[in-house]
Image 1 (cartoon, one colour):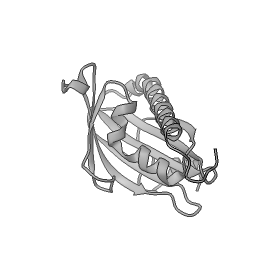
Image 2 (cartoon, rainbow, N blue to C red; image 1 turned 180 degrees about the vertical axis):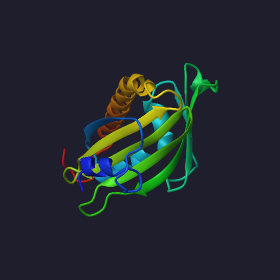
Image 3 (cartoon, helix red, strand yellow; image 1 turned 30 degrees about the vertical axis):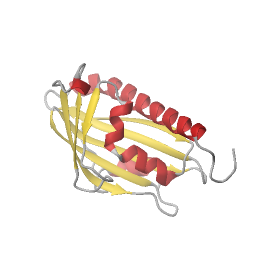
Image 4 (cartoon, one colour; image 1 turned 90 degrees about the horizontal axis):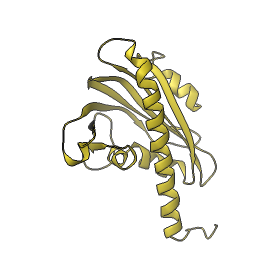
Length: 181
């Protein structure tokens, strides 16, 4: 299933889309799909990539039913209050033989509602294509979604760019296991 097909199916594969405007960003990463999926779906990593954000998530690998809370604001990383984004992992399916990995985080409020989805597909033995999408609306007037979309797109692009830089930097610091450049 392609990432666009996965994205249209929504969190439970029901064909229903969460309310809000869809914003999606894709990026090629120089690591295998399984490694990219683990990196991108571990919400604890998001605090390194998303400005002014701290993330609280349970220890260990992500799992279905786990609760994640992100707080964003000028001093959020220092513990100050900010915009709270509570999420539940409703789907966490790592990539398999010929299948994309899909993780769905359902946004539970109090301000942001909808879902965030990360899809990772193999693009060769040592490369993957990651698509991070958000279909989010504000708990309040519907026209606010038009204001949220550009901010979300910029945040997703920045997060995936930073993840890519982090992966490339870590690859330069350690020798290749295969001996290939």
